Length: 195
Image (tube, rainbow, N blue to C red; front, side, top):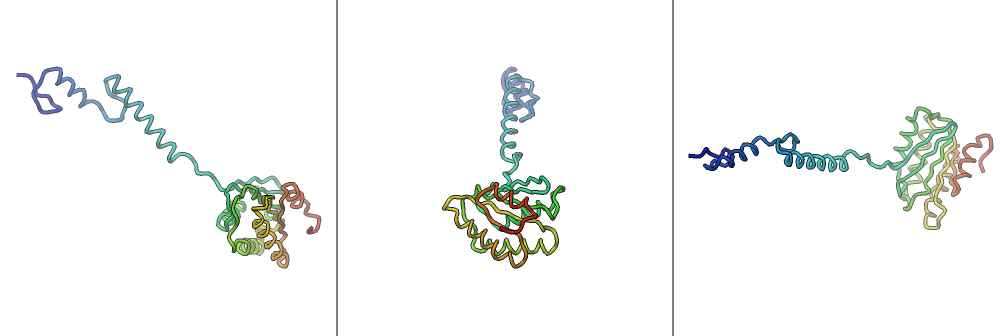
């Protein structure tokens, strides 16, 4: 009588028994199977699993802004489409933690990539954050915001002008521009008075 097939519990031929033993020895997704075809299949399968995990979890999330500090100037370039007070507070924290940044440095905040207007309360919240940092002595230099020159983004310019007007009595040196070069020149010219 033929031996029992260990994989199925059914009596069969010797060939069936060898096939069952091979199947029993084949590990799942380990790439160490003795059969070359199975080994190659497992390698391809594990490679696909690795690629899926890499694309889903290993890629860094895009940052809403970048910070470049070149004394005596810091440039915050915004990649987010809409200015929010939460992103601004995050930018303040990251800027102050930068090892090359000093409180006396000027800051250019580049919002030219923005495609949506701010919240109605953004200007007052932003001004309150600037006043707090100035009172603590952590941000004393000039701050210039560059907004898009398109007519559809006029609300961003109005919000910047509101911060500019309300901040003057508190001694905050803030201005809004539509030209990046003019903003850099104004921030860098610390000896001149306000425009």
